[in-house]
Amino acid sequence: MVKVIALETPDASQRKRFGFLSGQIKVPDDFNTMGADEIESLFEGGE
Image 1 (tube, rainbow, N blue to C red):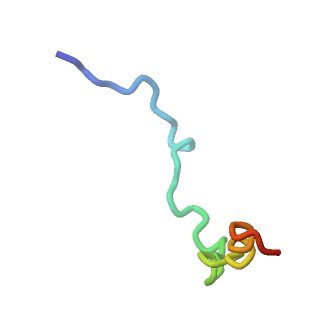
Image 2 (image 1 turned 90 degrees about the vertical axis):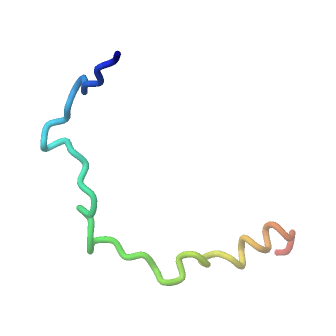
């Protein structure tokens, strides 16, 4: 039989908060395709 307990619990001020930067960071609409041409040329050996 095993008893599982937390050894150290973080204080309330140390807990991670999801969404604490909400509204402060903007991801561009073309984020998934940024630099696609340069990356493609690097893999294909073009300049």
